[in-house]
Length: 453
Ligand SMILES: [Cu+2]
Image 1: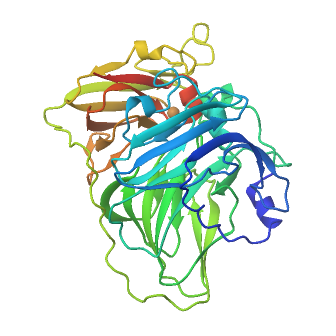
Image 2: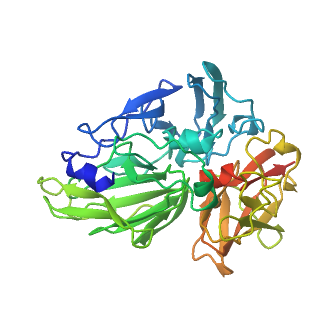
Image 3: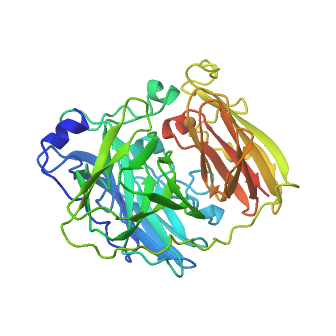
């Protein structure tokens, strides 16, 4: 089955508006059956937060305190990780490192922490992630600026992909050796907010703040909005100098906030193309203009978002470390006699998710309050979105070339055989994961612990 076949048999659907803001702060994990590929096609058994994929869109205001009670009604243990949020270590949701797992069959845990930064974040399990995220456990966490820029609509597209058979059943071979040692589990069906979409309905003259979240296990997106200028105003939730992008590239875990000014004519339609993978371009959906006359003829200047209170690293005086990512197919993999099922290494060593005491052996210990530059070196033939917990970093350079503009993030996409330097102040005490967000890579060795003490 491919996406086209489903599209051919599915009546045109308007992209659903984002799930409304949730004030009742409970998340319940349980299996659910959802129509990912249209009401006319079989439904899919998924794992969901509050019965929906993506889970409820959580919206807060910058500076507010998040408090969410989690109940795990699945048959497996889980946790919730709040991707990109600078929070206290005990709330980070990494099993055995920051908390015990939330037990299967009714375990509970309450997450409670302040939200220091505005931006687009997301939540997902950090236990058995390749399977749990792959089955549908994720949702957007949006922290609005105290004074948000004026737009007509502010909404998220949570992008994910699925490996489905012709009856729309999920392939159950999560984290298999083939996926784990290559590009990860890339699905055959791409959904926007939990369903295949034919169109996204807009009105001429609208200004939309579009928050893109890549919740896929492994798929990288390269989105082109035909007929539109897309302005990037934030990456990984952190404001960036507004700039026009002809193609928005998002690795797993990454986010981008766009300003989409609807300058098309009433009644017109424009494709959004994902052409990240060579020769595998497809149409994600069409931006469909209603017949209504334009809301406005002229648009205000694209807004610059206020900076978040992230400490600025002193790059010139920073302590420097080199972290080398190795292994994978066509690379030097760990010995399968010693490290069965582990295909990737960080500084020569694989780390297994089930290695419960990995916090005892941090890759690096960083002195609290100091600035660090980490040179991240990808010696493999594969892409790796490298994610650091508990901190936000500046991307200083790529392949030895200084970044064109100040760019902050929590995840940096490393191309095959490439490197990047990230800089940050180690100001959040605790043991923090540094790992690849291709979840099959994470599960098969590509993670490490950085200690801030
Ligand atoms: Cu990877």
